Length: 296
Image 1 (spheres, rainbow, N blue to C red):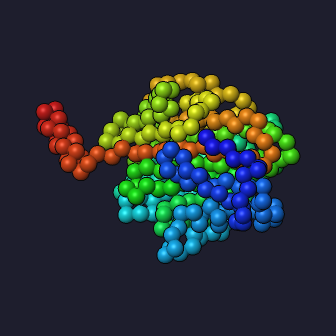
Image 2: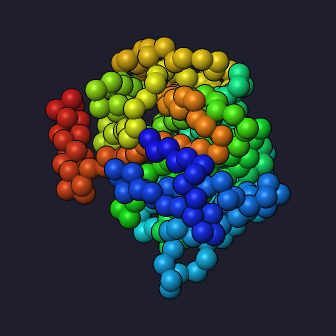
Image 3: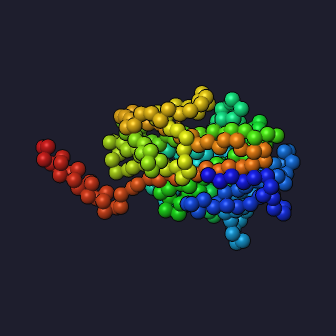
């Protein structure tokens, strides 16, 4: 978790860059931010520009209702293209198979939980395979970032929350994930390891794949299953592990207590899909054939 205070100002542009333990760059807004009317677009462009080099094209601002995705030779990640709900990552194709049904973030402060159903600004950088989402709500701004690894097998994701109110406030940040390995969902198995803060999911119907999710910052709670963010009022119960077989969903929370006016805080996580090497897949197929022959 990072905190940046309102006194950490820099000359324009009013953004600074930090890196977490995983090397993920994160934006920090200082008190010298643009006016509210221009803040969303300015933040989105500044965020996306962090991931381009001098020779690359500028990141693309994605219009409402238009596809928002980035791809490399192995994988594609995509956001919900519905203009009323664009903060949900709902596709992660690897070698043509989709392993993700949805991931979405939410923030609870001042007695209200907001899971970002509403307007936002999305930018896509095809050079660095990065999607950035920025938005503004009553009392806070947020920036969500997804970075697809070059091999396509992991995603570094983060959220930065800035207190835009006039006084310190408590913030609880939620992230909900629903993996569907190879598109399957009915017989999934899930578990959570408190020591490593890692969620693991498998599916007996697709045993060659394993999905993991790891919190890179201390969490305040978790729950499995978790159907929605918006009804959540307070503390997650740290319940139900292992879980399944069923359609597995899980939610994790992070806390930023007494975040000062103008201060920012960031949390990051890592998604990963384990896929056997081609040789291992061939052995699995051969083993299946041998079992089938013995049954005959």
